[in-house]
Length: 230
Image (tube, rainbow, N blue to C red; front, side, top):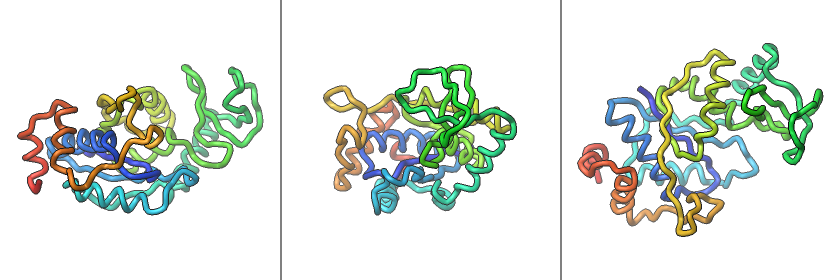
């Protein structure tokens, strides 16, 4: 099996990121599988300079070890273009000029945005600014990296059927998906950069890893086995 962790370099890792990384890493390592890192850096305006290096440094500090090179989505634009071209040839997408406030259904026949037909509601695969969507890129990359198991936060539950839809249209394999509970702040909001989640304290790696294992209801013995250096 092959699992992966795919952070966006929009800022430092926080406890919610650690929970997701631990869940994916433990799932892969406990089954003797590979674990990959992918930087989801397509949305260039949101990227923070140096955040990718900081993320990798933090993961190493917390005892994570990954297999193979780190893949950056910004280097794979040709692959996404080829996938979109295939969807276009097969008649699965259409150009759109709707804004986010436009009331569906879309009746566009021209536009810079590309949307894929989907029974539950069409969704974007390339934005009007030319940036390929998360949904398309992640499907193409998971297939390219031969990812068999995806463990991620429950906030991506709605994305999973969309990605499975794209996999079927493109003739790509579908990984096994599992979703873990979200870490929340005191206001009940998901820990994220948008909710000002504090970065991981590098001086508290053992305490934070133990907290992540408790959050996921994982046994402490498993932590000692998979993170022996800590």
